[in-house]
Image 1: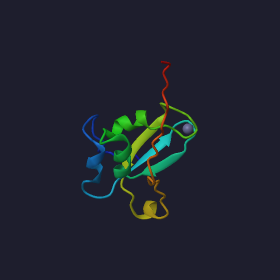
Image 2: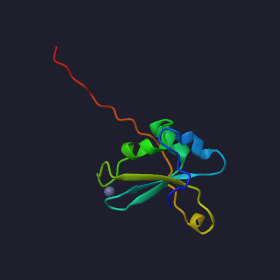
Image 3: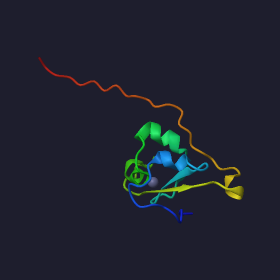
Image 4: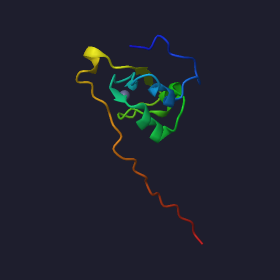
Length: 103
Ligand SMILES: [Zn+2]
């Protein structure tokens, strides 16, 4: 369900979604239709306080589809809130990648 007051680009950093009640971010892959719900504060930890629209370009489908993500914010209410699964951030794993040089 798209937000009818979805603001124009660059008007809405993720941090503003928590103003005035709980909002979640639903990210759906347009190709395989998988969708996950995230809390804005979890997304901020990964991507920084970026514009909500720009997330569509940063998020990646776990099936490897890129550039096909649709992002919308919503407030779960009543029926929708029951049994709603929210994907929470457990940890951010930092990969150590060795870079070599011949001397
Ligand atoms: Zn996909």
